[in-house]
Length: 384
Ligand SMILES: C[S@@+](CC[C@H](N)C(=O)[O-])C[C@H]1O[C@@H](n2cnc3c(N)ncnc32)[C@H](O)[C@@H]1O
Picture (cartoon, rainbow, N blue to C red):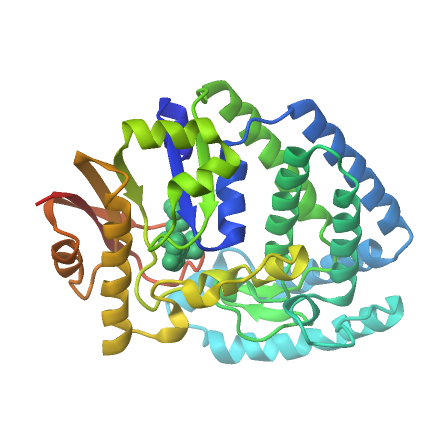
């Protein structure tokens, strides 16, 4: 949708995850940018007032100073990493030893500032994966967002908050994409080669993502065209585009009925890799969107076994067959997939389509830097 809006091509998206659909829609919404900026400034100001009543920032400042001294002594840049590379230091043993050595300093500060680390309950994602103070700040900003009157402003600022809280989960830098256990103490970080700390306030990320979002919105506003773009929340195997769009933008629904759609660009889920709802569990908890995990195609929790693969092939074939009724005869479908099980020839066959071209696309920038790079294939499908 983002690229088609830039090119002046109408587009409709479908995603079964309500939160992902919200993100998609936020990217192509036309905003009152003055209103967005005014609301962000208001919320940032009140967050700072809220923080000034707590000692968290001072605590974090002291902790950072202590860490700085410790890391400069035991993990000098760049010598330490060179030594690890040349195997002159056993990173695991040395890291663990220094982690233990720093803990008393950390505990002393926690005690001194009376920082409450864990929340009293662990029932929801927000209870489990956030330190007590971060949780309070999230709630504070959330309540401020509720006061916003303009719906589009409210939605984009909610996305800024969700991006902020994604960065503030109590996890190590190495496990950002696959959460293991909540951490509430300083730890040896293999990614940065030093002792790192969990977060104690959302302020830094909130400000940095607010700034970044405004910059992007201003830029995009200049290059976008005035075409229709809507992402429907629904299951691609059965979604009725006309019915869905009729409720939101009847003119667009009419256009699709009369003119039909020329093509599809999609990056479908791949078998057994990601649980798309669970990935944004914090947002579902905070905003209270309805979860439809059971409708995801190829979720991680179903694995990559024979049955999972069969159900994936069936799912993708159903999506393409459902999509066909909205397409012109000479349609083009472009799908990005990491097809290591060679399932796409069968999927195309099941949908009465043929693969007319394939392109390789390297995937280099991953959240988890230590996970290897791999290639994806871009399939170009047409009617048989
Ligand atoms: C690889 S992501 C691509 C997201 C987005 N289209 C993009 O390109 O940024 C795959 C998406 O498929 C969605 N999905 C999974 N099962 C679905 C289904 N049955 N119907 C519609 N969307 C589904 C997931 O929620 C996820 O957002």
